[in-house]
Image 1 (cartoon, rainbow, N blue to C red):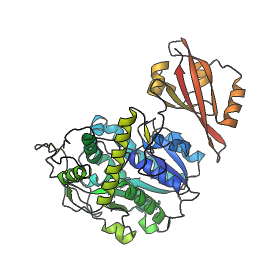
Image 2 (cartoon, rainbow, N blue to C red):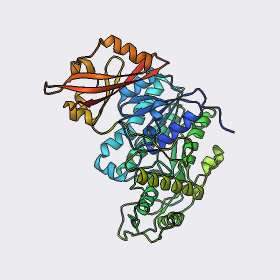
Image 3 (cartoon, rainbow, N blue to C red):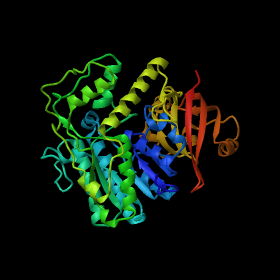
Image 4 (cartoon, rainbow, N blue to C red):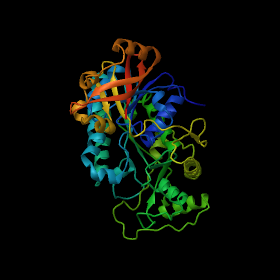
Length: 453
């Protein structure tokens, strides 16, 4: 029987365009929650935009590390539950921008929890940490072990983890931490990760390549189970203060060699099962395994899928995805009614369109790379300013009439003349879409501008 806990709840999800975040938003919508999604930038290749979840939630644009963005979201919405699922694991990305990782993970968590402590002490928070915080030590990892991070990603997540524990236990905030095995499932487009990378290689007729000798072991969690544990922990926090500040491991507890996983995928895809391996790799932790005994004991958690069923569903999803993409060329994919059905959707916006997100008074909240290219201003120069003053816009009709049409129809399109940074003028075909917030009677405008040739 589905939980009724979420019906009518106002839920804030940071990291909505991420792998976990997209699935979390989708589930919350299906259970009747009013979802507020924090989106830093437009990400076409994400479940959030491919499934048009942005049209089913209220979108707040900005960085989770920007305290003004967070405070604005909480001012606009009566948030009951907050999920921090921003900044997922991408080893290569973190090594290029370690400070950004720390700010989006650790600093943001400290700032948000302090804000909640002072202004929204009843708001439930679930912070997504990682099994990587345990570092290299005896397995299986248990929650009472000291964290031993080394890699910048591990260090940032460990600090985030400790912040949540501190605010839960010292300040009695209703917050807890999830430490999960490797997520896998559909809509994971990070092809540096094992399972999606192997499936793509096979679909492209290539031999899968591993960045280890294949003997490393990993613990996993199918994305359907991963979403379950997020919701379960939040529900339990609403009932049991003894859980405040606690961290919980979630995984299947199966030590599976990477090579065995590849062979299972190959068998499911009727492909040769001999991958190329890197015999000299030392960069990664060789063996990771979690004990989920605490979660089973205190939360009554039991996975709904398991590794084998999850892998079968995942491979089937990717086969459908890649087969449909090949058939349709570059058309984007979307799956709407069922998990295993793939249908077409048109990509939006295309790369030559400038995307700008602003409040009803014109204050700019998001400025895309294409907007920078077309207009000449960098994001840091325009965020917080007002578009009409910046562009010195020439409208085809009175602005008041346009704004009234947007409020009534939620959409407007027409030609505008804008000023660029260098003082020159350009004509753009402009489309405005309005997203209304019934709680505050305010609205956000998503503006797409294409330069007229």
